[in-house]
Length: 206
Image (cartoon, rainbow, N blue to C red):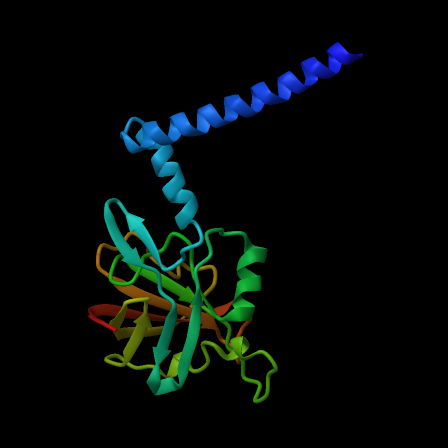
């Protein structure tokens, strides 16, 4: 039995020595820039995975929208930025504010699409159900502000319309930078949606 204990102890020592040598060797190679770039990139991705304020299109960095404000109709609410198009996940996020549809544009880049709840009830416990109240009252030329972490982006309304949910509400193929907002028509047919389209004007630093 003694020789078994001796071998067992030696195995543990060898394992510890091997781990130490491996860690030290990797550290030296990293400092000398001999570690493959894929491994370095993997570390960077892991560390930045919790940062939801920016994203990349190609090599250009763009901010994610964090808040939308439309002073004329009293809208000032947070914007959720999901990475899934799962209907149940999107419905859940609508309980916390306006949602940017995954894959749509970003502030100042492409056609950015926000959708949110609206209600005709005077009193609601969850204010997210009133997030897009009174969108129908917007007119051409009205200002919409979208806030990122570092900038505020200005849009001007060019069109307000009532559409059926079976229609194409948003054209993601358009080349111009714009913002599209949508909410249900609370006093009309269940499938009706108010759609607001606004053109990007410019941005300024916060």
